[in-house]
Image (cartoon, rainbow, N blue to C red; front, top):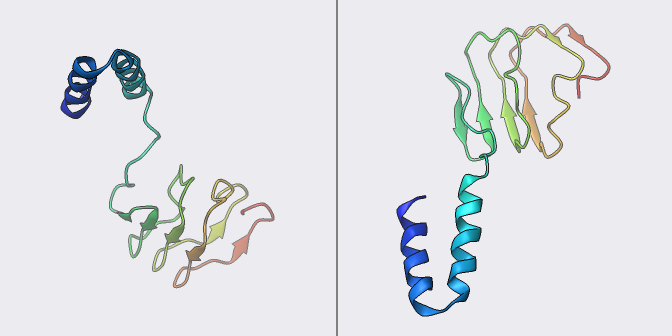
Length: 109
């Protein structure tokens, strides 16, 4: 449990009985597994935007769900395979220029 949650629990416990319930809920929330996060190695992340540019990639990074923007410019992508971008339901822009794309499979998106 982090210090902020611990401080809030002590404050609530001293102020009112409902603080016990709030502390328990906070502790349970802290124990939930975090959503997979982390920027792919060598890429640059800015919030929900991912920039993997000029890295000589031959395929897109995996586990990209939740992104709003994805830049794979200046890489060595030659094919967009089926299912490669299917988890990107909120994607608003995708940059694939300066690659060597010669094939896009039907269900790539």
